Length: 366
Length: 131
Image (cartoon, rainbow over all chains, first blue to last red; front, top):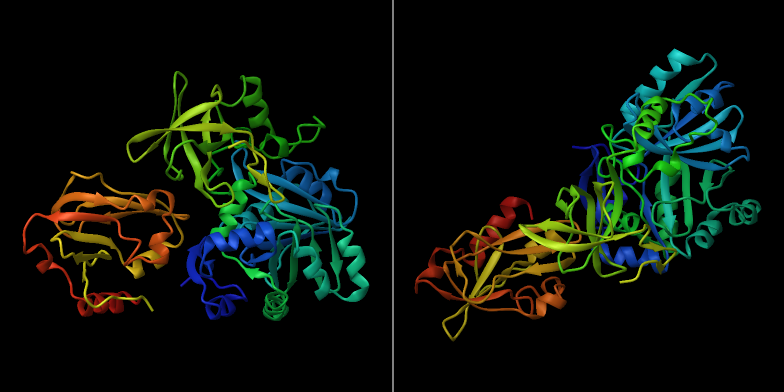
């Protein structure tokens, strides 16, 4: 038996098909994964993401600690509620996790980490803290649940559940910003490529909030739709597209590494600097569109004629494009076309600049 | 609950077989199988003329989440495959025992269906699997 979120009972009651995900019993769909996908692109859907972990970093050394811990630079965060996406690296530049950090105030940053790595992340953070800083607390918020409400109609529906005095300011949040609303923290973030809010709330309030969102017309969606949505949106999945043996430069995440200012010493910096000095990474992560019928899947071999070989890291059927799409790690010299080995047949695929879909719009030419 | 049709024969690996008046055997996957797979997005069926061995993989069905082999419930030769599935694989989700049929096979022997499960026996298999 896996770990259960506070919404487990509701998922089962709604007829969800439950699967193991990183040690958690989570809904993969409530019937049709494709229908759930479309609801998010066109209307509003929601995901129980309570298996992810909220970690509060508190104390006056918080900023200095996170500037050392993370590959992106929290000095970019100056406005309360502002969010930053970052990798947390090991000394060899491998990605321990990808996460979002919110600047709550100068004594308090909130970090949201993946379910499968939450225990190792917290252990790593505590070990790093012991080495470097004094005035710091790392608090695993097991008292909080998280619901991601996503889609063009999502924000308006969530706003109706807020205290009237919080509504206008919350609806006025810019993308990648959040604010405290009473016991809740509401942020305009997500993992689908659509607008929406992620709501962090006390676990006691999660079931009633979920039911209220269902009553307001929000479709419960499982991890299946979450995966197809994030792939279309060009967003990496930890464990598939990068892990502790892969660095951000070969994982499509160079944009998340703040090399400037050069004086900031973060864990993994030297390893990445060395790779750049040696001519850059040997591989890169790209998007693929299968030109033929079939479905790209992780671990399929990618053949790049005259260049070398690579591997699909995540692949699926895209409900929006009605074609198969993937991310693949391929040799750096790869051009515009590759072949993918699907059950012994080499099928042509086109290299795509990510994302495939954003805010309901197809961004590539089919 | 998964639907099991009385007058069909079944394999433990969740395929069904129907003896047609022509003597050919029509083959598809069961309601339990399509439900477990979820929304199907791609089906690869064998070409006409291919020889099938009972119990060997003969087709692939892919849902959004995974690819799965389909095993030939009987030995025989493929006579026809369902061309509709190329563009509308969801026929298997919508009507797995009807419009979602996959192949029609000339059985290798007249007794080919005898080794398969009855509807009752297949229902018992599902019950034992908890589905």
